[in-house]
Amino acid sequence: MNDAYDDNGDDSDLEYLDELPDVHYTDTPQNKIKRGEEVNITLKDPTINEIVVGVGWDLKKFDTKPLDLDVSIFLLGNDDKTRVDEDFIFYNNMVGSDGSVKHMGDSRTGAGEGDDEMMLLNLNELPFDISRISFVLSMYDVDFEGHNFSMVKNVYFRIVNKNTEHEIFRYELDDELTGNEGLIIGNLERIGSEWIFNAVGETVEGGLSKIADGYGIIVQENMQ
Image (tube, rainbow, N blue to C red; front, side, top):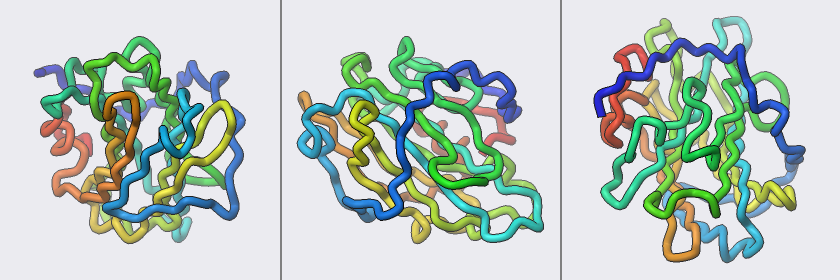
């Protein structure tokens, strides 16, 4: 693929905000997982179909320019590559696979409680040639002086059954964040009729553009 995505960070037109689910933030989360662990979310909750992916974080201090973290999704086939550019879902391409995957908008500050960024996925409506979904965390402006992952705390990734509001698991990421690299949070893999999440926690030097290149997407150099 040769189309370069423009990364201007524009979140002014969030047309899907009316679809935001009323998913509660759990003060005492259960089913915490660690890097290297697997969770069969189908076995955990056989009713699961529509899921909410929530990511949250807090800034350690507020006397500097806010650090803008971004969550991206890559829909991958058996060759570990995206099929088309639209299989890269982020705040400038908020819908993929005919509406089965939606990014609900970019939070630039991490302010407030609960999920800072949310994505909706309808697992039953995903095309069958999508065998794996990769979730990535990155920084928007890695060139801003002093910006790195050490500026944030309480970073987590969680999957929730949208219909029951039940949190399937939570993956706390503070120990996985170093420097200003991109982070492959984990992969949701389709095995037969089941979906299994693998907590990868792998940092990639070069940020989002390097990760995207590995998945067959070319982005502009300023996009990390």
